[in-house]
Image 1 (spheres, rainbow, N blue to C red):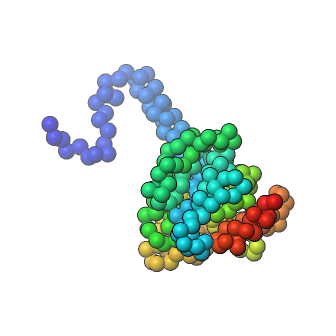
Image 2: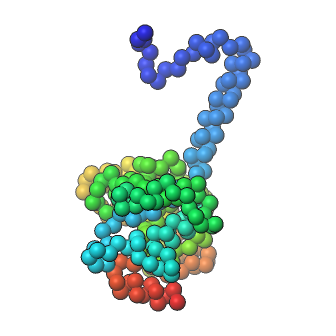
Image 3: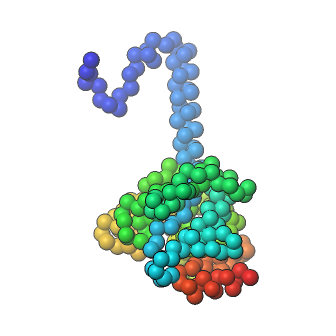
Length: 253
């Protein structure tokens, strides 16, 4: 039988048939369950590997995600280091290209992630890494979300753990390191609140990540702080060209 009850209204008839003590127990357990899920969302660490770039500067037919570096592809290496510090790791990119990674269990002994390699696509296709960050945040149930470009072979799990710890220690929407006198938005922690600012920028055709920071609170980890924690600008080296690839191999030897 059809009723006029709004879809968000609960049927309280069962609750009313409970005794007073049972009602108190029911409410107590419901509140505890709600607080548990709220706390889980607050504390959950989500990691996202941004792998949706076209790799055009690397040359025709070359995808940076699958380049070999020290016996691993850049993607596998990123998944491993991110999985060591995150509860769940997701690839942001073409689901068809990364189909074999979908919901795959990570084989690395260092990985603590329950799911390592599920894939989500950009909502705003062809709009650069800001679109990847937006898609990640739209997909995420977590408050803290660490974004990592797939082409950064020297990022360590220690650095990612440090970024998560710094983000947990402040209320800023974005926690981003500065290295080589530049912000590093593709190795930074974003709270879900940045999703709205990112979408607004994307809809306006403004694809520069740093420019979207102006409307939210930002905690910048300065170079001297990174150095004090044992990290150098080398950690943020990224591979965009064949020359970068050769330089990266030279730095790793």
